[in-house]
Length: 172
Image (cartoon, rainbow, N blue to C red):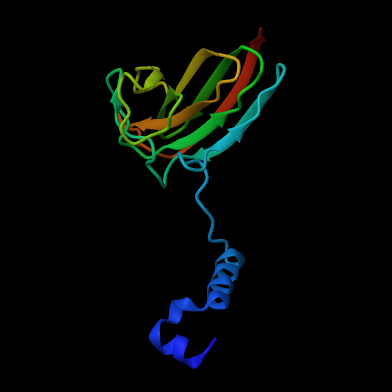
């Protein structure tokens, strides 16, 4: 880099920017996973079962809004179910010890969800039952987002660790 470049604008040095990217990569500066912009992929083929134990929903709120009487203002964790050439019936379950998870099924992960943009919201509707399940049919060629949200009720927190299970029940 020329001395005149350094004095006038220190960020014009392309080798400096490359060095900065290498340093950030070396120290693990990565996009957070489990968000709308970086969902955790769920590859469901055949009749397989995929488990994600200890999924922590604390740390980001990338899917927000309200639908079916549920406020989605809590921190969340986002999964994206892969598209497939087959129609599939899928079961998703979430259970926890200290938080009450509810599940949001949507084709778009976004900050302004409404009843028009959400396919389904599933909660057990009981403060003492710390789990929720949802069954749904995924059309061929369509990816879907499953967002794990938390409901703060009597003795529960609105975010925390939850065990999430995905299962294909039927392939048509």
